[in-house]
Image (cartoon, rainbow, N blue to C red; front, side, top):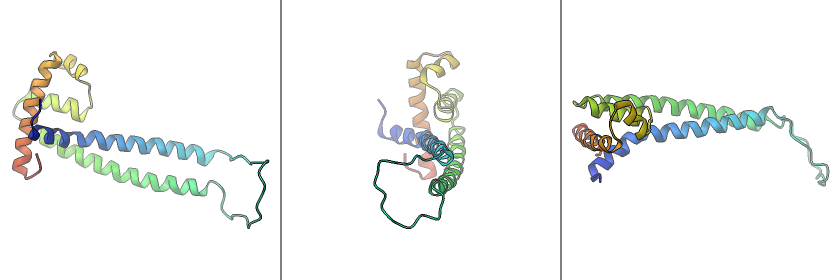
Length: 150
């Protein structure tokens, strides 16, 4: 069971994963918009047509504009992700114990599963959890000296 300082350290480390998930979701949305922007729309022949002036824009223009805006947003998110990843990697690298560094890097930088980490390091998952708990305490102490929450 993690204490509150360890939980705050864990949340700090998990920021990269959340940021990565957001970027991935936006990239999927970009792919959907690209697909829509290159497809030909269908006409509804059974609907009654209301008289209005025709739009001067091609039907895909709004989709392309959304696509451009979303690509700019993803670019900004990527910059934030890379900065955050460097900050967290630098924090992890301050730990004195190499096993703690490796567990945190594998889990929070490389997003490996506990089973994959156990196989990589030749430890049981239970032992990794003990190392992880100690590593979170170390990160909490580092963050406290930096004046960050944890």
